[in-house]
Length: 172
Image 1 (tube, rainbow, N blue to C red):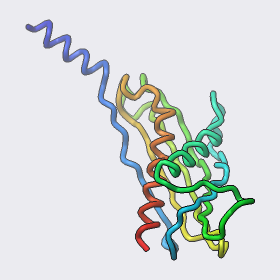
Image 2 (cartoon, rainbow, N blue to C red; image 1 turned 135 degrees about the vertical axis):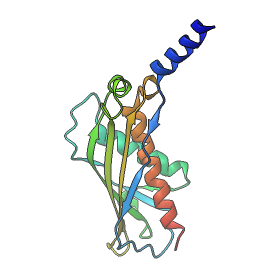
Image 3 (cartoon, one colour; image 1 turned 90 degrees about the vertical axis):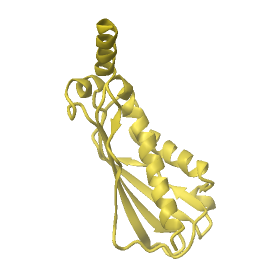
Image 4 (cartoon, rainbow, N blue to C red; image 1 turned 90 degrees about the horizontal axis):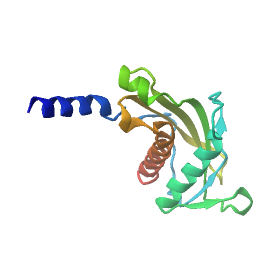
């Protein structure tokens, strides 16, 4: 019985819990949604994070944002074919640190995976900026369950961004 209890305890310690810090979303006081948008012009994400890793982080974020918008029923448009009642999204990846699941397992807080992105929203018809959103998310503790956080955190940031856009879009 002691062996079974010890084995279970060891397994819990090895696997560790997955703890994703809550997404922090900040927006400017000048949010000014005057209408609901159904069409969105997603400009390519610009990478200011300095990340030089295995994949093109800006391209991946652009794809994830478009996918999250489509999943919520938005139409993705290109500037050349744009309807004037479209919302323009311009995102800047300000911080990206892939972190390490092993380091998080050894000491919570060490090896954190972090993403910070700022998205500026502009009304295509008027050209006026109607708001911005800063999304900040991290995975700072956990063990084996946080393996791959360097990629799934990006999808989570994209989905959180779209949730916030939807919240504002419907709050008119």
